[in-house]
Image (cartoon, rainbow, N blue to C red; front, side, top):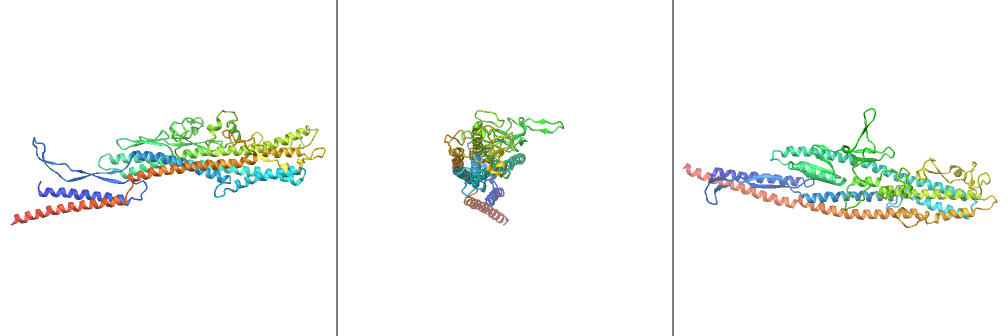
Length: 551
């Protein structure tokens, strides 16, 4: 090769080293950029010039220098996959643990002190018990009668406040779930847009859409936190993404997640638009029904939550599980479904896995038991005194037995949201009298009321065998919540460590190390100086030849 041609070899070194320095500078500039992946220079030799071909093993060839072949991203497919799965599992237990903390606060037993409603309800149980004890000492005392009715009123009012707070938290989770679904749709559409841009950019085989790929990988990380995802990339660079086993992004299609609104509760159910069956009203408008989305739901909330089955992944699923799909009542602990019919296994498959619904049902059972037990005792004692028309003891002007608790709506059940204190008795507690027609104090009745508070015949749910009385029921309910919260926090802490370790391992591959980049910068700078020195040497040789020949 001529000396003039040798200059091109030096220039290739200058260009390649300069591009490598630019890549290093790009890495250093994006050290703190979210989702950025470290880029690495790939160099290759340029084609050789063959001077002479022969039958010998080695041909006479001259090299033309170095070529800056590509800038590739440093990623590990398996670390990405494992991190996204474990980050999603971490999000699931993070939401679950936070929900338990909120319920502890509502019940008035959290580390921060808890809500006023929870504290007041806990006090109302104790106060109600004290009122019953005082009543047993002197049943005919108007003070004790008034205290008994007043404490019963406080019990119902504060129970209603706690149950309302649980329902409001359900509504908060419901609205948060809407935001999560909107994010999923937004991310899916952006991934599809990025797919098209990446394919277009890399179609010529020269340019590599590394920054676009960074953004797409960041979106996959975010999707992985909300649900169980899987993905694959074709030879053109197009990414297909599945969410909970269903295609979310495929080809030029984005399978939108829609929300069905329950007309009774207002709760949203995410479903796949392309898998649902829609009806039309008389005006031609699309009508989505509960039957139409069967089989199209994004999540199966009746499936057993298990790490082995990967059914404990994603913040959105955790929110929906914690929220449940309706307001739970005590009857569901007895496997009575929402239609009022017995359905074996209803509680375990539809209520127990929902954090809030489980607490609602157990809490409602306490209020129902207190109200129906006391009402039952009053009614039985009225019947013992004699039928209506013969005896007016513990009976109203219509001859019906006095009931301390009454329903808001007669057709509904004795649930905490449908129980009121008898306003007639509240205005005039002396109507109860507690004095029989022979003017003797009704001590047996008050003793039965005391026994009702101490009778250990109740359990929190069908899966718990420890019998409880009214006085201990709420304490054990709170303890159950605290224990469950501790379990969730323990799992979450362990899962956080797992996700963090995978994240750190991935950062060793994709993250930018300032020390490493500075080392590369020195190396490429030295390479640049070497190429520059080589060109200077060739230039001096040319100058020497020209000067010599010029003489």
